[in-house]
Image (cartoon, rainbow, N blue to C red; front, side, top):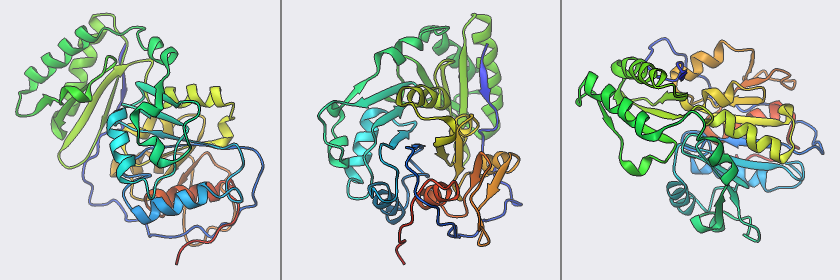
Length: 323
């Protein structure tokens, strides 16, 4: 049966409050137990170069981040698109140890002997795909049948309202359709019904703003949460020391797992609505104690919002912020 991330769409909402760009005033004591940070890229880790550089400076400071901690980037981008991005941002981005690409359908590990630098990470050949992860995505999946279901859905709503994204955005376990906001539910329902009738198991994830959304149809075994869990278990970090960070609808599933979560202050309206209904701490100028809940909604945007959340959870030692 298809699983649908239904909170993912983003529709404009005049009543959405704009959160103040506030710095958390929490200064937590450094702790020795490693953490794992799994961050979305566009709109979360990347978007404000100064904020990204601030995060990287903190992450690379052994007095701030516990020794043995892991940084993972989880993105809708392909490996090649990620490599291009980090090449452009190598002066400000921290190097990850793992990559989750194409909405959780690909996992890559840094090859042994590769330098732990952004410049090295920009070489796509420095990463190796995890074959065990890729094999498990075959369960309940038939690319040709899913592609037919998507094509029929596009025909049903009209090609002015939906279309296949470029083939380079596909892989053997992911098909992406671009769809106008008002037709996302119809396309989702159509694909869900057609794949169910074929006995397939797929996950449908919608995200985006600006009148059009990406509708990703992936193996039910894939996804940002499932891939996070796979890496978390391999690294050996507990749920309470694993933090997912995101800003958009395709981050919803990993933000809703058993792990900790940071929703950055610039999150898309639908994600902010969803997060506000969860058991959370909300960043404010009055924050004076560590957040003991699973989710933190940052006042600050993008990478500074990530730092704000990590400090609120008490995971970082003290460091000096740029003025």
